[in-house]
Image (cartoon, rainbow, N blue to C red; front, side, top):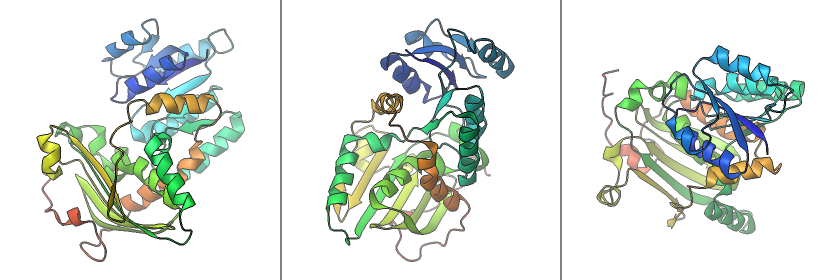
Length: 321
């Protein structure tokens, strides 16, 4: 049994980490979040110490070092822009770290964190759960065993609707979340490059507060993508089915289905990491480079080979920003 502490216990993704820690037979001894809506912890670790002040949490972590409750692992589920600092904190208190995606917002942050890994002798891992999805593993095997010179035509569409609260939260601030491509798309870019190879060209056609559309030329694929948080973009079959999320990948005109099998991927990721086979933060550098380049690009408009949904009319920011 390993001792965990959790930073960011009040957010959307925290329950998946709580369950993963529980289901892998480990113990959560402390958690921190500046918000106190963390009653979900009663379902997993009711005896866990909880702090809403960073200073008190840090004091507690310092006190239990080199005791029977010494911290083995730090799990991080905080807003994207804080990941870098909290990973450093976890490594420097002598623990290994598991961090939600995106691990950081900029590729140079990964280089600096790898220096801290070397200084401390501890390791930091990223949750790249799509690499553990059975259907995606099978797709990678199929591509790896296919013709070496074949270039695939891929269309990625991912629409996950968000209400106006999104724009008030840190997620609506591109400086904190990285924007739509980073916040909801980073794991798809990781998946695509994991399967189809390195980026040769990265073009952005459309980018606004609620969507991003562009083109990636990879070693083995030409990828057109459309990512959106606007419910108006959902297809009729998704709306009629009362679903708020639509994801599809078309490969050479055939739909690749992977809508199921997501619920247990965090637990599978934890098992993978604890067995010594996890994805180190260095492996996330390629997808972080992609989203950083997108964020810093100037959209070229509807030119060249663009995703069909890129033509959808732009809308004003709900707050007029």
